[in-house]
Structure formats: structure tokens, C-alpha cells
Amino acid sequence: MSHQDTGALWGQWHNWSWNGFRSHWRVLGKGNQVPMLLLHGFGAHSAHWRNNACFFANAGFKVYGLDLIGFGQSDQPTSKQLPKLNNQFWAEQVIAFLEEIVQSSKNKKTIIIGNSLGSLTAVNALLLRQDLISAVIAAPLPDPALVQNKRTSTPNCLESIRRLIINIIFHLIPLEIIVPLISRTGLIRLGLQFAYHHSVKSDQELNNLIAKPARREGAAMALRAMCIGMATRPRSFTAPFFLEMLSKQSFRSPILLLWGREDKLVPLQIGQRLLQEHPWLELAVLENTGHCPHDESPKEFNQYVLKWLDLNLDITRQEA
Image 1 (cartoon, rainbow, N blue to C red):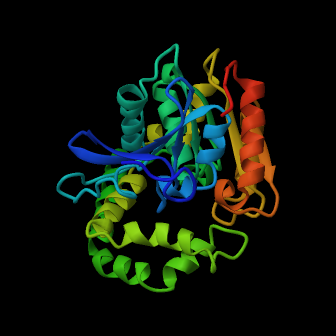
Image 2 (image 1 turned 135 degrees about the vertical axis):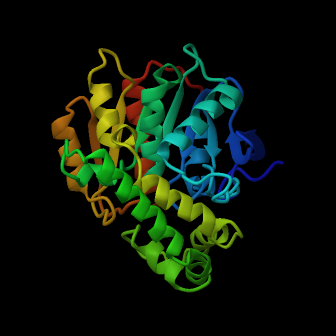
């Protein structure tokens, strides 16, 4: 199905079946161009790259957008179908997408740009299959584990009890009532505004693309699976572990951390600390910008990413 090249309806739309779930994806650009995959953040989907996809396609990339399972127009699994959803699951979805749809290989690696949860998923995928990924731009990189005490280990029996309590709590919370209430009132705009530095009140397209998936029948069940999955992950599924493992490799694909200085959800101090701990990372900061730099400051974001890719990758791209 063909759609327009700009705005939330960008690209040609397709569905892809993976592990019994339907995944929505879209693409813009020519077949012989350098592949680039855009991964959205929590609560968003591929339409959130409305201000970026056309720019990168015109700059010589074949741009893909993927709705992670549980988001956008991809399937929202029930708790019976999938009790837990976490970044390891999404990373496996991304790897399968690179292999089956993008057809990435050692000779045709893909650039991944992620926002928030999409960044965590991208770095996870990079650790698993660096042979498919040439670079990752994480804008920004979030993970509760980044602000927790390092190397703290919990006895297995206590960890089992903690996971049980988390499961009980999230099954007791009436998300089937809360999620529709939030998605159909001004509460969703309040939550969205927290991710932006400038006012989003008049941006009806943005409000609609966030609210619409939250009104789907399976939204509450998918959210419960995400909350349980993310809260009960082992340390080997967290950003600190991924970066530690990547730092030990003699050759690694470059990673750019791109932060909005006014990010209230994942403060810039986290990115600055990551740079101190892992000097091989690069950090760039966009002024007057919140948690969604790609959408709030798209001109600056697009130009910086393009310049960084040209400096860090040996690629030949043909501008449209």
C-alpha cells in the first residue's frame, strides 16, 4: 500500500509475520541505497519519524520503519500469547527483520536510529548481531538499570519473590480501565508533554499518532506484558551489560548518544556519565529539546546525524 513521502503517513506500508505476530513496517527510498532502520520509543510507532524519514531517503538511504510488537499497528499480544515483553524480545524481532526484510549481511549492514526504548532495543540487537549493523544512533539511551547501584546481586530466592510480587501487582492494577481513560482524555497529552520541551498542544498529528494505538482493544494487555517483562529482566538484558560487553570487543560498530538538554525523562547526566565510563561512545546534545530530539528538533537532529554518519562510516550514498 502506497502513502505519501512526508508526515505521519510516510512510506510504503507492509505487514510481516514473525513468531506468529503481525508486524507493521514501512519503507521509503530506492532499492540500492544504504539501509537505515528507525525504531520508535515507548508509546510511539513508526509514524513518529514523520520529520526524518523523507530527509534521510533524499540523502541517499533506504529508510525502514518498524512497529515493535505491542506498539502502533503491530499486534498487541494477550498475556496468554506472551506473558512478558522486553527489549530482548524486541531485539530478536529487529534481527529477524534485518535478515528477512532488509536482507542485511556482512556486506550490507544497516544503520539503526532509535528513540528511547528503540535505542535500548538497537544496542541490544547490536550486541547480538554486530555483523548486521554498521552503526547505532541512540537518541537517547534509557534504562532504569543505568541509575541503579552496580553489581548489586539479589539471592535467587528473594529474586523469585520479587518477580512474583511484580506479577501480582501488575495483574491487580486495572489497566483495562486506566488505559482507555488516559487515551480518551487530556491525560495522554499531559504525559506526552512531559517528553517535549516545547508545547505540543497544537500538534494534532502528534497527539493522534500517540493516542490511536492506546485505544486499541489489546493495548492494556500489551502494556501489562511490557511492565512485567521490563521489571523482571535479568541483568544480561540491560544497557549496562550491553555496553560492558561491547567495550571488551576489539572492533565494534560506532554508537552515537544524542540527547536533548531539556530531557525530563532521561536526564542528560546519564549520557554524560555513560561517556565517562565508556569513552569510545560519542555524545551530542541538542539545545532546547526534550526526550524526542528527532521530532522536536528535526532539522538539527537530521543534519547532525547525517554529518556523523559521513564521518564515521565508509558508505557511498546517492542523494535523491
